[in-house]
Image 1: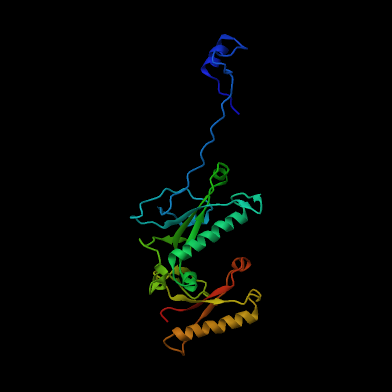
Image 2 (image 1 turned 30 degrees about the vertical axis):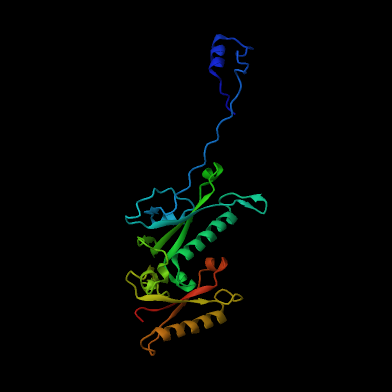
Length: 270
């Protein structure tokens, strides 16, 4: 604690006088409590940003907002408050439990904002992104979290968002613009995942669930998913004698985090 001397105390110190008190009865060397610094301000809801792709992979973000009337790649849907107290324990802002709390909340906010079915949301390239304070900011008392909406256009790029996004995935033809497409079959080494508004030759047409008790890449589950994906192509294809399809399993990392569905791909146009 830093002692703050009164003016009288400074004068007495300069004169070499000690052991005296002022006429008002106050101790000239009395300390005053330091004023605690206010925690860093939370970001504003509904703000827009020009974020690069790499920025959405970071846990924190300090970009300055831009007018939403100008091109922007991220829009804040919600700013909430983190509860770091879990089961009676105060957790760090970067702990897995706290970050899961933020991620789950932001995914739910994005889903409610975008509308459409669960499958449409899984097939779309419109995604939720989330940010929380740095450790230094949280130590200063910042407990906010920020939920943004972004449009992932390619493997390492974001696209500008439309001016209005509320309920956008519930509109007819939403996946023609915002769906997940590919530059080739996912089995081809030239394959790159892109938003369907960009040039492409294949499209993710359906989400197929994988049995909860299946082994990763298990033979029985692969055979079942392949058969169901063929049926998807048969319904979409113009020529039932020229069917081509490809079922894409989740990555091992996605599987380990609990994802039990994959993408059924077919040529586009069908």
